[in-house]
Image 1 (cartoon, helix red, strand yellow):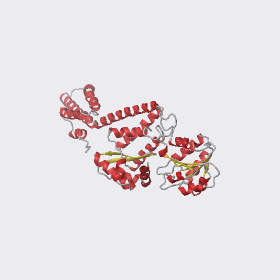
Image 2 (image 1 turned 45 degrees about the horizontal axis):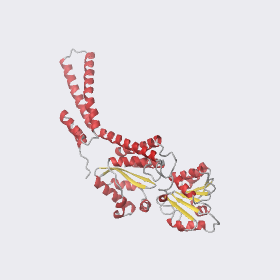
Image 3 (image 1 turned 30 degrees about the vertical axis):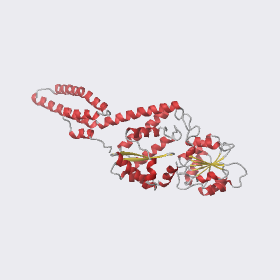
Image 4 (image 1 turned 90 degrees about the horizontal axis):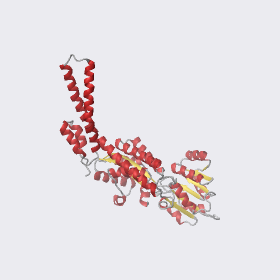
Length: 418
């Protein structure tokens, strides 16, 4: 988590990282997925090892973390395993709080950013949209998120253990993004009524305050607001600490009783870790939540969700393989169409006395025959496409029917894994 925090702190712009990654000769498309406990690069690549090396260098360059320090912490998934991983991430199966729904919105935002920047093309659009659909299906068909747990709810449950009365506490939310809004909503659901919110964007804080019936505080008044709070939830993602040790110590100095609980849900950290050493201050961050009660969904729901992921990955791979052989299917049908048209023209020249009605009947009969003859081969070639020996069927059709060499070359061209 410390290295992840360091990387997040030094990665100011996803757009710049995408541009650097796309400058690689081996990378065609890419998107960056950021969640509470991950920063991932999803990419469509031409070569495995070359692309991994270039992506790692780009991350190192954009974060000031050396390759030697970064490399041991990288994990890489390729082809089917990469699809499987993205589907699992979107479903909340690989989240700190298993089954949380927030991850689906984070993946959606990542895909949208990549689409808007032009770094996501056909491949990432298809796998990204499929991942979002799989996530929705799992949340709909399983009870993975039945307990309604989220990073915020689990964090507040942990925070309540250090407060005499959570519902009667004075809460301060720092950050007006999605996590900040969720924090306000969760606090209100837990019965907390004395809530203030502040952020770097004053207008957003005031808008949320008006919508939720709470108080807005200017960021410049944060030290005063912190001194008046029992609980502060931070989720700004700003670079540099929003609450440092000096501010936290001043906030508890002179308190007659009670603690100040600081819940840091940001990456990079909003709250200086040194705050945990201050008497009267309790600091919780994302690393404290992974093993917390409520962070895990029921095993039956997890099992059902993984089964759906496995099924969807298999269907996706088969569908992609079928798309890959589409050029040869088109070539086969074009070849048959050309033969049919040639024979129809020859028939018309040989029998000019043939009526238009009879000629149309003959043509329809010939087309039905052609369609029936081609049905089985075209269905089979799509079915066989995902088979390890599937390319042999493409080569066989090429030889048997003398098809367009370019169409067959597209299908049979080997994909280099280095």
